[in-house]
Amino acid sequence: MAAIPISELTPNARTADPAGTASGATNIVAASVPEELLLRAVVTTATTNVTIKAGDNPPALNSGQGDLTAACVVGTNWIGPLTSARFIQSDGTINVDVATPANVTLTAFHLPRTA
Image 1 (cartoon, helix red, strand yellow):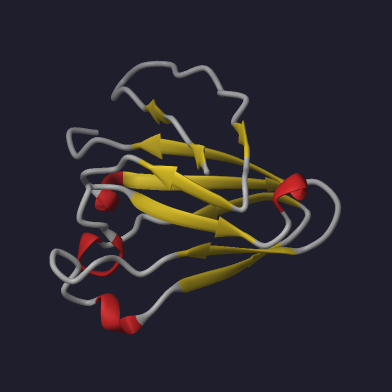
Image 2 (cartoon, rainbow, N blue to C red; image 1 turned 30 degrees about the vertical axis):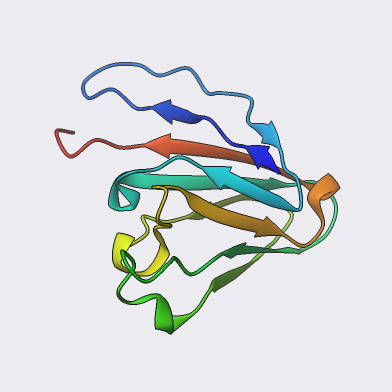
């Protein structure tokens, strides 16, 4: 299981583009506020499914809507913001599964509400 660090976006400031983290089959993003989270999936060779797993109920009261699967094409793909009511796990994380891990680099960005 790969832990994906969160890159903070600072309002009214420059943020260097982080390199991202090579994904594993299952990835964890420690996001206490998914509504402020954007995921960047950079795909290198072929379309790959990236799945945001439904959360635990509770606290994810809308987890019954199920997983979100995005067919990410070669290049840069953006996923989010996400809703905590659907995706947050009981430990405050978001679980992200990648169908072909060697093909994807993930980066998580936090966009604070003060932006």
